[in-house]
Length: 322
Image (cartoon, rainbow, N blue to C red; front, side, top):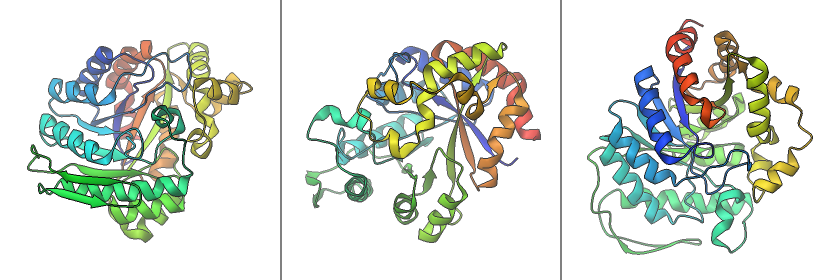
């Protein structure tokens, strides 16, 4: 299996100090890259955390030496103005000494509604994302930028601290419209579902030969029943699909939408337990769909170190051999 395996700093299930400590441990364990979620709220109250991802990224960049870092993903459409995202990404790239990838997406109501003004439909968010990418790319050239778009304005802005090597820019996809946008504008395709058609649409719009980064939740525990219970408590929302998940406004809505999901339903979609082969099997559809990278998400903040130890001693070697 020719996949590069990464680790996920899941901001919704751990505080900022632990997230940095965990990514340091992940680097030592042999993970090739790490992604970080950028949320204002957790998906469910049971997860219990949501620190500011960009502060965590800065600390992680300084505390690590080799591991790649990536936002998975940040949304420059409402909560953040794209001019601010351009500055933040340039700074993290400098701190990381060239190891950072800026992953962008059209956002979720869960995180973006907090600034008010309503939640736009997907086609409007894609228009906003296109303008945002144009602004970010232009600001990264180092000149003063003024921009008048349908959704954004920039007045005489300039990024004063730019890295010699600019970050790669990824765009999250879930359907043909977002794949076309990513193929035209992105260096990297980002997706959580290993659907072959996503890569085909991405290629058709100009993405041929570019990396594709996926994400797979797992629930490691030596006791499989404990692993299933934890996955059900904290990740039962995952099965709703991104067209639903992008629209729900907060943890109570995700709790209500997933209240009939059973533990056995979660166990069918998320590898639970301590079997490296089961995780390798779950990764295979990503490889078959042309993905080049997959970041694993260990469910549960208190289970990170046991999972990282398991990955170092058993899992990463098993995936390489699969």
